[in-house]
Length: 267
Image (cartoon, rainbow, N blue to C red; front, side):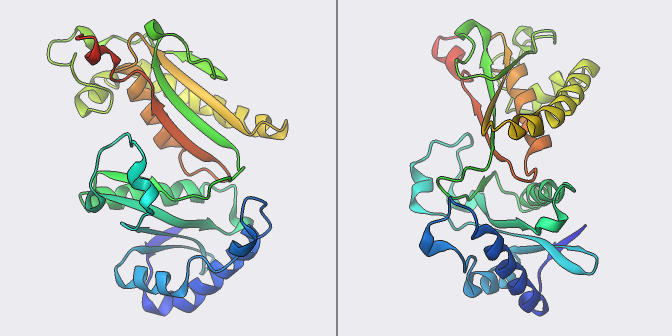
């Protein structure tokens, strides 16, 4: 699939694409009766095209996927404690990320999200946030990092221990940093075992998740733990999130439960 910025000449086909997706989503129970269609509006799409914030995916000579990425967000966004602190101008929100159902299962949603991440980096932005509808019952996947010394999260469905990897806590200059910092990420991924673990975990989850869904499970909490929940587990939870984000039909959240607890204890 080729992903590019939409142009004015694409508007008519893009409008038809979104109208088709409104029909598909209109069958979902989580959409209010008064909100079964019309999103995004013509004005929103035209403005996004003009600002180069509207992106389309082309396959077989037609638009099969699309998303909008801009700074627009509801006031509720300002009440959330986000993982990354960022001013409105430093972050973007993904809106109207859609893939035609007949093109599902090809990883196109994941490609759109990765394209958005790459584009945000090129534009010097700090954070990407996903706009979604409250009450959406599409299966959720949540990745959580934690520290074993603070206890295993009670709501975990799957727990993975990454204490087999060397601990950057004992490396001078790294103790105060976290898995959100490049220095820690570089330290962890210098070991081939970290890459092997991530590959095998991704493969297992790609097998397990569809089977959980088939059995009616609509939420899965995957917890990755190290000693303090600050370095190794954060790094690997973030990496897993990046690999699996945007997969068709899955909502996604990430939380680092214990990332700041050592600092509060003066360690």
